[in-house]
Image (cartoon, rainbow, N blue to C red; front, side, top):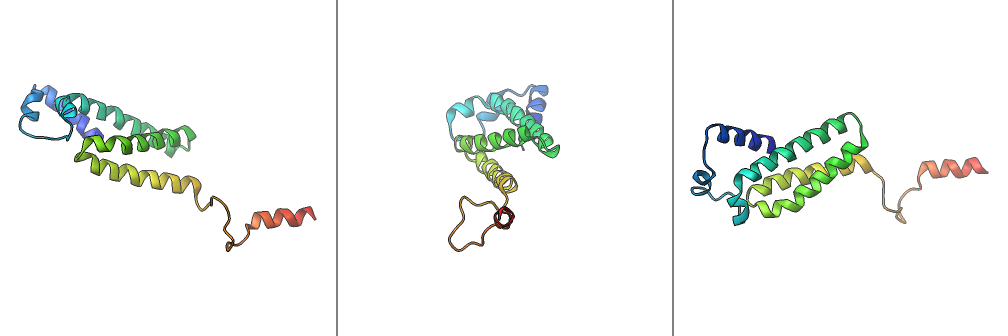
Length: 132
């Protein structure tokens, strides 16, 4: 998603479209600071896109640092989405979904602590029977 914005910036700069031509007609962000620095925001989206691609490739290759990079990227996106309303809603939806999938893949079915009504773990039962 962010990659297309960065490509759009390259096209706008190649066509020599001034930033004021866009921001005068359309209100993209709720905060005036972000609205006034639209081209910088578009350039920063390219940084986010490259970090997402690097993290995704590292996850694909099974690297733990890729998991951490992707987790940090998702959390950072969720924290910043509130400042980039309304387009941040879609970005936050995607980042939140990715965060839930990453955490469920990492932790699986592990629990915080066993409940009173849960079955004892088979590996614990095997370990205690082997000691006897």
